[in-house]
Image 1 (cartoon, rainbow, N blue to C red):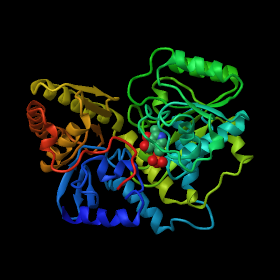
Image 2 (cartoon, rainbow, N blue to C red; image 1 turned 30 degrees about the horizontal axis):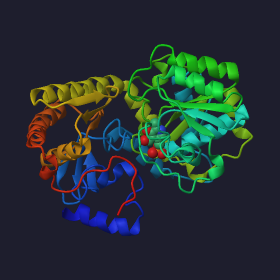
Image 3 (cartoon, rainbow, N blue to C red; image 1 turned 90 degrees about the horizontal axis):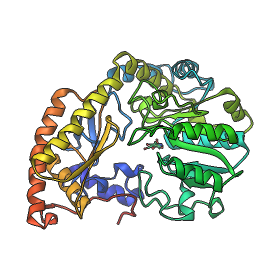
Image 4 (cartoon, helix red, strand yellow; image 1 turned 180 degrees about the horizontal axis):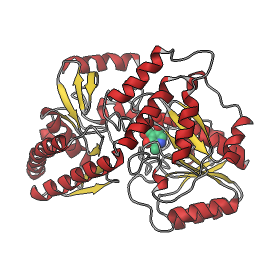
Length: 436
Ligand SMILES: Cc1ncc(COP(=O)(O)O)c(C=O)c1O
């Protein structure tokens, strides 16, 4: 079990849910056997509490560490900010430099606000958008965090959010009076979107979506959203918290020539330091002056300093190009190995954020077997791969070599008719669940 799992058992008694992020629960990977805690990290490598080293071929800090762990340039900027005082009574000048940098990259935008986490940045964006539109109704697709506006979608039907990344999200504690205010539509379903707008005529103030998550936008989808929103005075918020910086330097909406009213960045914007930015058109962002939106730690110096360093490095190293080609190699590798071992898998996701699914009766059993086998080979791995700048060709080669053996093992488990027999622990969770 090791020190990490011992500590996690203790954590579960002290911290409800074990960790602060569902996607970092060991139960989401390999219950009872996932290393859970790290002692140090560098590039694409992580050491657990027993000093065992792993190559991270999974989520790279759940998408936050695009440049890799403990990136020297970003850390240097963060340390310099610490040495000057991370927070004082006066403001950090880096806030203005970062605003200029973001606006230069997104010429449609004029102003920025900041928060620390993605979910709260989305809550700020939604507040501003509702204030501007003077209507409470929201149409959305995709995952946007834990806040009431989003989870309220599951008050109407507890399955509303299931197709939007994380299934089973429980809105317990979200005021029931919010029911019916946030309604989901499916990405690329232009017709469904138009029907929803028609049915909710006059009630919708905000449309929230990721510019891309899995498939590329179908012709006409984003254009229809923009046209409808403009016609009806609806504010469009694009969530770039995960898609941003990966396909192009800046928000992925730039690639699709899609002009939102607000775009939101988080996670990868600062490579592991808490920071998020809400950028938008002046006439929309100015409304933030009329609604109380204010928090002490949104003013720290480390976040903007780290973001400036990360953005500059991502531009200088053409990081998105590296992420696309690395991710593509991994996706092609999965397909090749599955064919070699006669396994049925579905591969999806944009290239820098690829994923696969075992097309069998109990896909979670096979997913757990994959993680189990890969961990024994020294890899943190699941059925998704978030490419980072720290992933070099050698990591991909080593990973695919190990995955070759893992797929052979899984093919054997499938052939036996009893794949569960090959598990050393229990099956991983597929979404939100109460821990026992
Ligand atoms: C698209 C998107 N929006 C919002 C969030 C929430 O961000 P955070 O976990 O920093 O609150 C995430 C996190 O996974 C995300 O992927």
